[in-house]
Image (cartoon, rainbow, N blue to C red; front, side, top):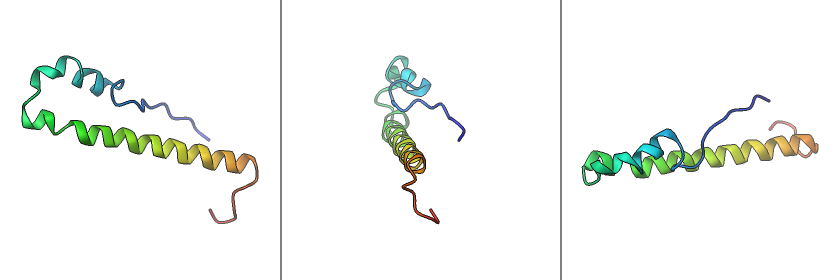
Length: 69
């Protein structure tokens, strides 16, 4: 299985570093303020995806995965 590197912490990715750092000068602008929620959701979904892949890989290693999926 191929490994993928991704930052799962919304405050540590490049956008998060800017958003919670220098980007705060734009706080109060509707477009800026509206960015936080979907950005956090994206990272949450990424965490769920990584966990699902890890569980599947672990089940495969232990022969626990059922036929067909």
